[in-house]
Image (cartoon, rainbow, N blue to C red; front, side, top):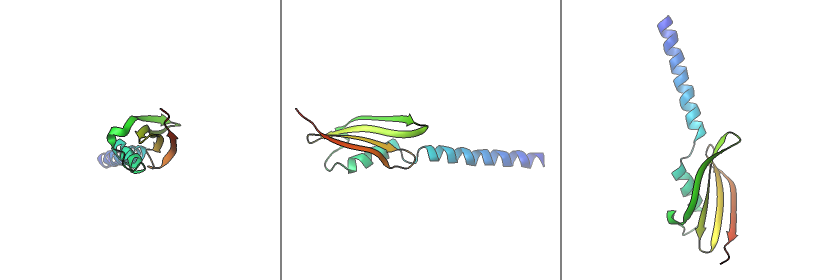
Length: 94
């Protein structure tokens, strides 16, 4: 009985642990970059000038900049949901 209880507890911890890890990062950093690039037609990974992982209010987010065709695109993506929480576009003045 003691062995079964220990095995059950370990199984529950393993399931909860994997659930917590997967819920922290629903999308990878590569997927986040690709989502942002998909919104800027013609831009490539070479146009991503800044990209970081950060925590805000206990949630993981990705933030970055894309410079392409005279515009700067600032974005933030919630890593748990994969949704954009910020998308700003500015024309660059030279």
